[in-house]
Length: 399
Ligand code: LCS
Image 1 (tube, helix red, strand yellow):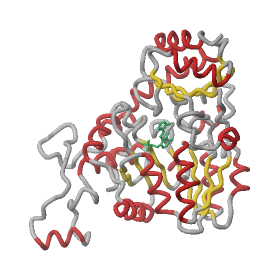
Image 2 (image 1 turned 180 degrees about the vertical axis):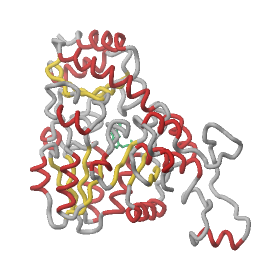
Image 3 (image 1 turned 90 degrees about the vertical axis):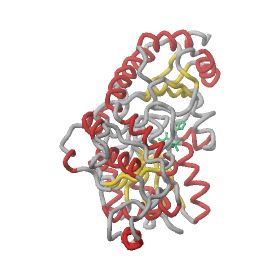
Image 4 (image 1 turned 45 degrees about the vertical axis):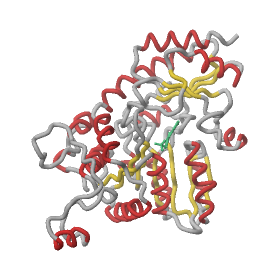
């Protein structure tokens, strides 16, 4: 389904609320109903055949298409300024579908070194079994990307900002570099969300999301999305997704449609909190460093200002006494929840080296900047004073 061009001139906060409706609505309903059905009846044998032949529009079977899932696809595609969305069961399903669609035996991928741990392991361990090789480099320096490209490189896969190191990559230049080498660029836009960053506008060929994070925003369901602008790329990915079957369930789509409507409101509040917490942490005696794109000392602060519409609500910091100090903080927070995942209304704290990125070998992890002392914080929408007080009392337990 292409996005609704009538609405494309609307601003993001309006699109988040109004794009992705049934057209026309069945009963004038204001929110999209859940079409919780696996299959759709055909009025006649001829009509069934015409739908299968794609001569007539119309629903067939939910693994192919479902009205509630379509509504979410249209919404996120519009937010990304893309033409087509493909919803998937999880963020990993979106990522693996892109790899399945674009890579074959003998293909090479260059990816950001500090990717979400499972994405890296998916390439390194699983796609390697099918003859796909991968090179991981710090793409915040594009010379590393240029050097890593090979004649067989089919895909450049970038996360910006990176999970958990908060490094940024210049997407416009990265797209040029990839295209000059005949490779495609896919971007994991989970950390920024389309409210703050739209990689397709900067030249990327595909965007992937873990909708589990900011877009849903309530830590109550998983989900993923691929967004593209090109029709051929869409058809290829759609074919692969339908065959491999990692599609989204209508109930999931409905939950995420409810969440996405408040994405801009939630992210405005969360990033305002994050900016203040970053400043607060920077001056704390038990914090050794803070990495947040909104701080003037962030190595890509200027790029963040150009490439993003805001600095986001993720940050990481180092604590005194390394891993031991980190454990003390994680074990003493009372309001902030010790949990992986991110992007919900509640603040979450975790330790990447022993949790989300533990599957990446230590040496590789450290080369990518995922140090033992690094603590990751997903800043939520609570009152800023409560967040500061909680972090202060937990940090103060480090002696
Ligand atoms: N991409 C990024 C940047 C992620 O952070 C995650 C999950 C995924 C993709 C995968 O999405 P999922 O399949 O879980 O929906 N990140 C997690 C994290 O940092 N902690 O727990 C999950």
